[in-house]
Length: 279
Image (spheres, rainbow, N blue to C red):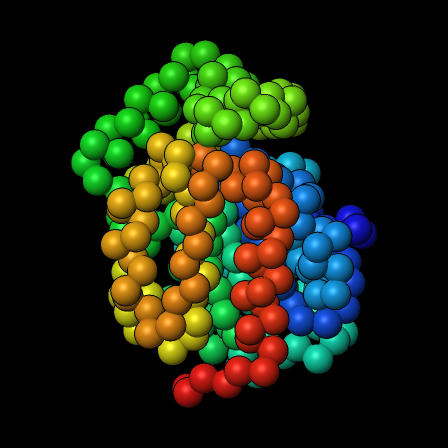
């Protein structure tokens, strides 16, 4: 993987890239950076991978607009910068595949809402198109107060283990420890801004209902953040959807069931190579 960076209105935004072929953008979630997708790098080596650190995560600086829509714009700028010397131009339709995890799914949907013409396909792991319920908003507000009182790392140290399934906690606790260790550099401001952006984001189920593109939807049996019964309510919305349920995962299927997740991603991307869809 090659480490690169761009400047967006005076702010440094970093990303990883490798390979040639179908452009695939992997968007990480809350309390993560691009390396959360590291188990997928080798599996997707025949693609042109672009994996940003979202503003405020990893090596990327926060930007002025940290809304879900603002984060989607930052991802767009990374894509245009990285693909400028290749075949891709913004005016060309159906050039990229975008997959988001959790909050990255919200960003993917915001991107698809505004730049649908740029996509060949899109989807998410452990995410939803519904807006937050009142209960979820209240939980996020409590999280914000905890962060302000105890700090970002203490919040992530206590919340990360909840993301994993009982199977992972028993069979592979090291991956949980590794993610906790990797979360030390988050600022309070970044996490608070992410939470506020998620609270304020609108319902985007219309993006799924209106798209002509095939949509990848991956959920998990032990996911407490996006419960399976709620996720499956999205399944009928796209004209064509690929739905997968990970049986041993919580909210981190790309890590917890890496081989199955890689198979799902490869099969989905391969299905797009020879298929055409109406505008």
